[in-house]
Image 1 (spheres, rainbow, N blue to C red):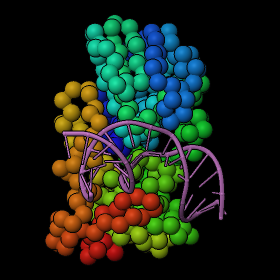
Image 2 (tube, chains in turn yellow, brown, green):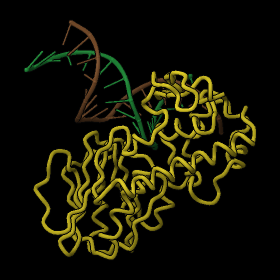
Image 3 (cartoon, rainbow, N blue to C red):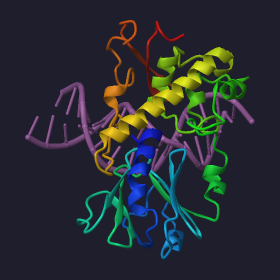
Image 4 (cartoon, chains in turn green, red, purple):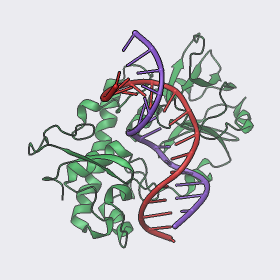
Length: 271
DNA sequence: AGGTTCGCCTGCGGGC
DNA sequence: TGCCCGCAGGCGAACC
């Protein structure tokens, strides 16, 4: 399930092959993704790809008249073909066809992904405009989390997964960061002090950065496999490991549902 | 307005 | 072996 590190890894893999090339066609085989793929995506045709950026888990394909916005959802993946592409396979929903025989293919079995068109400034698009800070950039730190959390009674796990608070923290890395920081996922966000939020912010940055580094070395080509539980499962301390001993204290890891999501944590190390 | 639940999908693991 | 069921999950929308 692509989280921020997977999306960033995808971006880094795709960009060198596509940026600067002109988009010759957008082939949509399956229009019913998370939202119907709008006809307006054709407005990108005939224009060069100026930049491939990431905002939260969105990939932003910038062209002069606007941007294509792509989301991998739960099960999406991208692949680039540099000369002749094979016949599309099951769940190959969209091709971005570039000059020089280049083709980017979007595959998404569960169709939770998206392809949208943002005319003008993509960051002003309704889905992007109200997002919180990027966790790996300036503007995100423990002080920010602390200020945002005052008066919030929801579980801290739900709080850090709220895209208005900070983007790109999905279920896997929320669990990992909370474990690394020693914070119990169920604790009310408003009842955690500044020092612990500083630790938590640092943990969020660290787990995401480490996963991106791992992605850079793990993925040999620009193919991003449909990873179930992420491509970095060897690196995960608690996610998917309930019943196993806590890597810090040896106590069996617990699993319960918090904020409608399966959550693994250590009852002894996380308070 | 914060908080919670729903629903979109397919693949897969477990039970029988 | 094969079928069925339930669950998983990002996240916007709808609800309370």
